[in-house]
Image 1 (tube, rainbow, N blue to C red):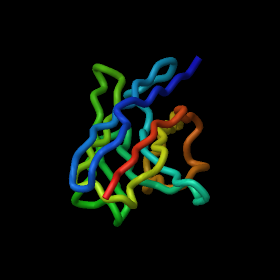
Image 2: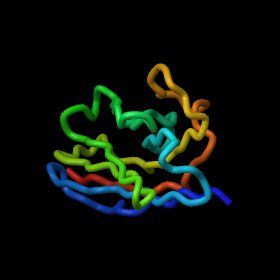
Image 3: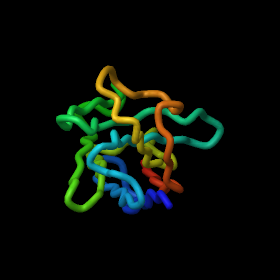
Image 4: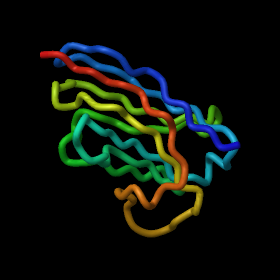
Amino acid sequence: QVQLVESGGGLMQAGGSLRLSCAASGLSFSSSTMAWFRQAPGKEREFVAAIRWNGGITDSADYVKGRFTISRDNAKNTVYLQMNSLKPEDTAVYFCAADSSRRRWGMQRTLDQYNYWGQGTQVTVSS
């Protein structure tokens, strides 16, 4: 029933921008913390950014701070990742994740804190 569908990935030259979208259905979106993770071939899936269900507080990994911005539109049940100043090392499959447990405390940066995942969208940044 729960579906997270990512879109917006593609091929971009270094220095360019992309905006990823994740459309959610089948869950209470407004009460879910949403996040983006990414995984490059042969590497572990890593945290990119999260936005809490309560208050819209955001968190992002150091390697994307100042370049990537996570946001959400509860009216559209959609979370976004605006990616600017893209680098080749940003190349990965980007996954949307949701935590429906309504946690109040702490940041959420680990895979086990999310119970729903999208299929991923490929982002490739060329030099």
